[in-house]
Length: 470
Image (cartoon, helix red, strand yellow):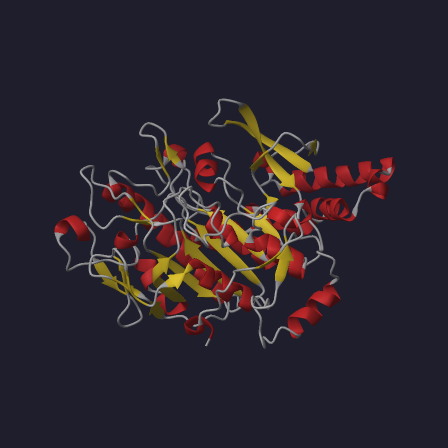
């Protein structure tokens, strides 16, 4: 491992830890670039997608107050917000998201997403599989294979390898806050049984078992000269010591990533022009946020990293910091004070997500890059006594965009109070199957082996959604 130490932080277990830029699990998956291009050409796709940006909303976002409002329901169900029309007739979103309403023709709203458990774990969001069967699981409920399920990004690393030299296939931008990691439980780029050679590149991780790169920390990533000078110094040290001569292939790839300017440049937001930063709201103050900080920069970083050549970029978004320490709530887990929280959070999501979609579109990247937005479950139809909604694993909503998918539509519906699917239930593995298909991977034939040698299909019996792929 190679890391750049960052500012101190404290985890939930009371240990004093440091943030790191971790270089890990960077491999070509056994394929040269020419092999990758030939594989994509044989995939049956005339125009396979090149990458995926996954936006996690950890904590369980409320579907009834975002993408599936019920204006005709009783007050204790419908809540305080009203639906607003979009630029696609017949599609409406929450009134707090006017920017997304203006790009609804580039979105598909899935209102009947199913398959969840009442478990604060985004494992299924990143892998497509439940983390573990419950104690009272019925026959057929899958458990984790030896070594665990691999994330989508790790599968892309294994099957397709790096797309651009010097840029890891799978990049994880999620924060290191203790509350964020509590909800995420497992890293979004976890390799599972595919092994560490296919682990995601964690831009901010908590790990002390690393080799530290001298002279640069995360607070100086914005200073390109200092960063590149540190990289240059590290390269000279390698050349002089001969350390790189005997390392294995995936560590050699890690050295190449670290010493290449391509990823460093993508992570350097000071290279983004003023107009670009302004599009994502980085040119204004946020007095309602702690220390005036937001995570809007993650959306811009995601665009820059996917444009640099990554295949899968994951970010986790909420207000900053993730945990509201005085109340003990987490992220989108709004068991109380839902509507005040939503009035502050939804406009930020609206700004960052719409900026990402518009930016990709204007750069002619949207057809090549799929965007998926979701959390681990929905919320109860009935508002509780504390003005919040509790966990509701029976159904929730999600957004998908780009990647050559058919957009400007709503897929599925829920019953009149939003408690169950009414039409077209969509399992989250159906969405994974669709994403894999757009990347040129046939889920009907592609398998991987767990640590016991047993083969597994990527998403079991689930198949791509015809409504999205035509």
